[in-house]
Amino acid sequence: EKDLSDQELRVLRWFYAHQEYGCSARMTEISVEHWNDDENVHGSGFGGGHVMVPGGYSEAMEAMARGLGVRTGEAVTKIAYGEGRVEVTCERRGGEGGESTIVADSVVVTAPLGCLKRRKIEFSPPLTDWKQSCIDRLGYGNLNKLVLEFEPGEDGRMFWEKGSNSVAEHRMFGLTSEDPESYGRFFMAWNMRRVCGAPILVLLLAGEAAYEPESDGHGLDAKAMKVLRKLFHDVEVPDPTKAKATAWLSDEFSNGSYSYVAAGGPGGGY
Image (tube, rainbow, N blue to C red; front, side, top):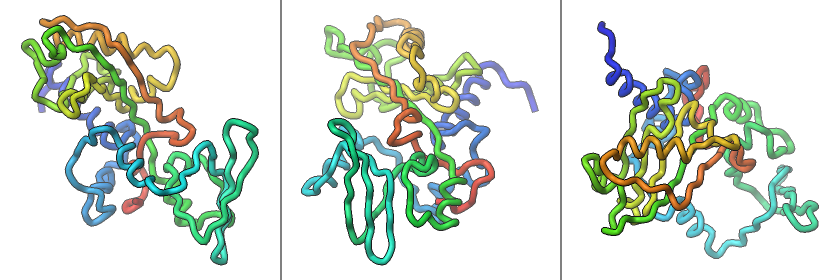
């Protein structure tokens, strides 16, 4: 054994952040034994390559919705089922409010795990014990992103496509933190110019840092620019023209980002 240098510690913390990103949870919340169950070919079968979807995941949703009667502005509050009949109660949002009811032969529930864990939907009769147990024991964490849009330079290039640290040929690049308390903040950036031609950088916030955008006055724009100006120190780095931070934990229709196997959670829970 030997003491790690400051540089080695920074790289080690980067891998901590990458693990927290993969599970959308703090290291202390993740199952050591089952953390990778979602990619286990003998388990959930969610393995495979990592890809980016130009245009975002809405491309898939919009394609699936074509020709369907999608009802917006209504939140499902109750599902009553049994004897070949399902009755779904919805709360109307906006306008006069009130409730509406949908009657069907069956229903497929695809609500986020975060909503199910918070009992946002009442089931009648209640879900079976084994289903509710899995919902309760699986983790549902938090991961957020800071999206920054910039104007290209006079030569048509972005600042990150210039200088000694150019990442013009890379879809993503990593950033190690000097601060051991905030190693998950901006530990990775996505170069959307490379992905789909957009003049945008997407900076990830994992682990403890994922909770920063959930409160007002987080100041992440200024913190991000400080990091980027240090990384691309030999080129001019302008202020962003637009900035937007996600806050998935605060979203009432998500209450988090995605699932993971929590410490003490069930193997094969997926």
